Image (cartoon, rainbow, N blue to C red; front, top):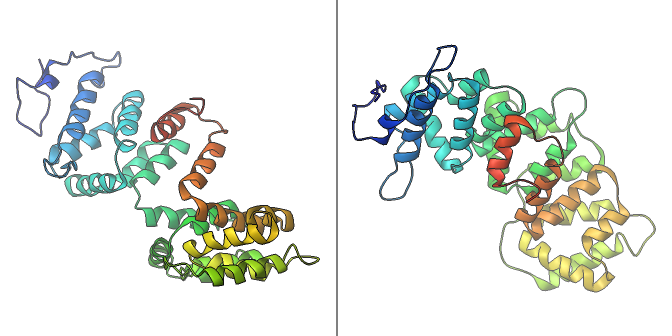
Length: 322
C-alpha cells in the first residue's frame, strides 16, 4: 500500500494505491508507482459536460512536472502517451495549468529534459499552431540560404487567418515584418509567389464563377502549352490569389481545354522551387489531408528509431508498414 501523493488526500480505495512498488537498483525513485500516479491524474480528470480534461487541479500539473524528472524510460513513455493523445486545444490547457501550478513554462522544461528530434516533436506538440508555424519559418530562414521545403509547405497549405497569426507571432518575437525578412532570403519568380501567399490576402469566397474559371484556364493554357516557353506570372497570379473553390473549377476547365491536368502541365513546364510551390498549392486545393498524408509518408522513410520514432508513430496511430 502507498500513500505517496503529497497533492491529494490518500484514498485507500483507489487502484493507484494497489500498484506494487518496485525500487530501482540505484534507489532514486519508485518507477512503477510514480508512473501510474502521474498517468492516473492526467487520464482521469475530465469535465462531465464536454469531455475536456480539467487540468487546472494542482495535482495534475505537479504530477506532470514530476514526469520530467523521472528515469528516462518512464518519462519518455508518459510524455508520449499524454501529449500525442490529446487535441491541440487540450495540450494548450495542459501547458496553461502547468505554468499556473509550477511557475515554469512546460515548453522550457521539455527543452531542458529532452534532446534531439524527440525534443523537437514534444515542443511542437505544446506550441500553439501560430507559434509552431512562426518558429518553423524562422528556422527555414536561419543561416546561409533558406530551407525552401518548409516555406513551401507552410505558405501553400495555410489559410489567410493562419498566415496572419504566424506573422503576428513573428512581429512580436522579431520586432520586424515577416514579409520584409522573407525578401532577404528568396528571389526570382519563387519569391513573387511566396510573397503573395505571405500577405494572407487570398480570396476566400465560396462562390464559383464558371465563366471566369474558363477565362483563367484559357489564360493558363496560352501561358504554357500553347506557346514556346512559359509565362510564370500568369500561374503565380491565378494560383496564389483565386479562391480554392474557384481554383477547383479552373482545374476542371483547364483539363477540358488542354487534355492534361494543371499539375501535369506545371511539372512539365517548370522546375525548381517555383514548380514545387505551385504543385503544393494545387495539391492543397484538391485535398489538404491528402497533401499532408503524402508529406507524412515521405518523412517516415527516414529514420524513426528511438523515442522520436515512438512519438511520431503514436501521433500517426500506427507504423508505416501497416
